[in-house]
View 1 (tube, helix red, strand yellow):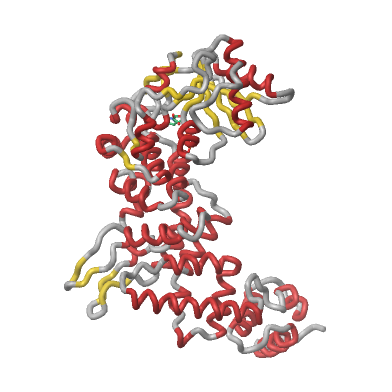
View 2 (cartoon, rainbow, N blue to C red):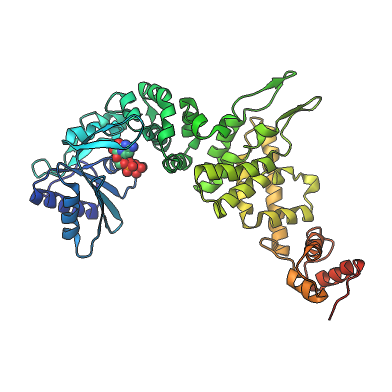
Length: 478
Ligand code: CTP
């Protein structure tokens, strides 16, 4: 009956099949059902999406069970009784079912008091007009777009607008302030002026939201095509100073004796956009965001010289740990990568034509290891000068550094390299227990190879070890 009817959104055959099964199950249970939210929005925008939200006027969990049954044996239903929601996974689709509801929120919490409602009640309580669009799965008007707030026109005009008065929508669920900014950055939409003012007025309410949810939205902004859009909106909305005060410390230009420094906040935003043009890797984008985070703490005006930020790379590296902890970001490999890139971000720039020696290149390869390509990408993104001659000079220099990196890597294989004489070998040779002497001998060998003093071979390293150990009155036991 339903299968011949067209839908107002473009869907694949598989998606059509699922929607027909949902419609049939809802019909048999006698509950009107609708496809709603992000799936409808994204299909209309031509974006990829695999998450379907289905709202029904009745019991969402019962509908989920019936749909799962009709999709095949062994299809599990995960349900959350307290929220009245249920989820079914089928192939690569995730379908979420919920009963239509009316909600009212308490001032101190984002957990709503929920009562059953109509489709209109449900659409009213949604965050944005573009997220309140619904497709009917009822037999009478199957496939029809239901758009009470002109969400379709807002999609067309690229506007983020709330269905109800913005202050109410944001105060009801303050996470929506971050969602508005995230959608603006992701979709390159504009937040309607009254909605943006309401965000500014309600910014403090973000404090009741859990860090995990804030981080999730923040990372979506970081992954958007031009993250500076969202980051600048977070700043202008007054949200950034609450969720990420260290970024605010970078805002502004200080003048002294007629000399100013660059605005490190806007410079950083530019660097994040630059790197975003070359990579979708979230952690390289985070490294760009944090590369100069140590600048405010190290800023000094040195008479006769101007503004300096000595040691901002090392200080910034230390701050990475604190920021990752605050944001509840992965503290192992991801944090280590970002910290390493922040600490090393000045190294390739500091190599000028005169001092691109083999040993300087070897040291850089040794310190950066497999992250050398990410580091070079960060350094190139860091060039934001408006002076075309300077930019040209920097880029040429990087080209030279890259060329030398390749040459030295090909001849020395220094990435992820370990010296040919290990700590165990040193202990065995001189019958030593683990301790400082072993460490000192090991690093002397490493330094000698990195400096090009001896070749990177076992024989040369062993001979060097005997000489160094001899000076300490150590003799080999075998
Ligand atoms: N929603 C809302 N308020 C929120 C979160 C969600 O009103 N704080 C509603 C919106 O109608 C949204 C739907 O619930 O479209 C589904 O939410 P979710 O899956 O979190 O977001 P999507 O809009 O689908 O977008 P994305 O998948 O990009 O997160």
